[in-house]
Amino acid sequence: MGISHQNGKVSSKLRYLRAFCPIPSMDICERLSSLLNSAAVSPRLLIVLAHPDDEVLAVGGRLERMAGSQFLCVTDGARLDGNDARDHGFPGLSEYRAARRRELLRAFELAGLDGNLCARMLNLKGNLGRQVSDRRAALQLAEITESLTREIQEFTPEAVLTHPYEGGHPDHDACSFAVHAAIRLLSSKVPLIEAPLYHAGREGMEMGVFLPGGPPASIALLSKLQQHHKHERLACFVSQSQTLGLFGAEMEQYRMAPHYNFIEPPHAGLLFYEGFRWGISGQGFCELAKAALADLGLPRADA
Image (tube, rainbow, N blue to C red):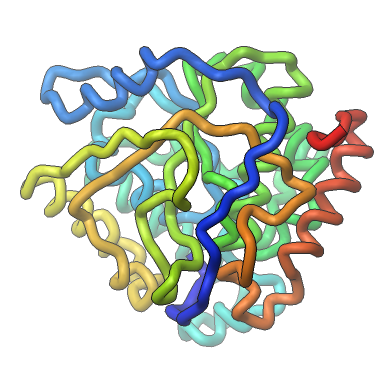
């Protein structure tokens, strides 16, 4: 996750502008809702999320039913400056990266899944083995997008699930941009679904819900057993326990992705990550998105 709890104020108004992807069929949402039925089979999803642990936050209560899906983690969850590694007691960056990977694999193991087969780190196109560091995804938007076009073509998912554009973490917003842009590059009609993690709210960080003003969400109220499983899986991420302890496990929700204009901030007021000294602002992200659209040969969404 790579965050700390901090209060912030935000307006509820969202800007939804022109299309980055087509409106997908509601059949996918209906099938995702049916995952609460013990006989349900998950759609074949490509799940593109930013950090090791985002997978469990997004769909961890029903992770065991997604054996036919592919999880792509866009960053390795480790900051290049090594501060996170030192803060968590690791001797170096490589050890911290490896620990975060082990935590993810353990969570998948508890769900009866082989994480080595269904949960991979995204390798940048043409650079096998080169991965994206925590808080650096916004600096590599075009490269990530090109890599995702290859992944979508090769996996041929029934739908893609990713983060909403919500201003919670720049890596989350970078994933949202890259998935939308990849679908545009492919002229694909693959349905695009999103699951919320956190954003700035009136009383601080709001977790597990979408920003107000968007399309309707499908809300899955998890059973006591599913909540227990989700807590168990989240507990695997020992290095992130302080942050993950802030999240509940009562429900999971998702919706069909709306049309975003990534050259405008996702909402008015202070974005959640702007409350930290992370070296990037909402406007800075929008400038990077504008440059990436030009590099990819895609027209701006406000044109």
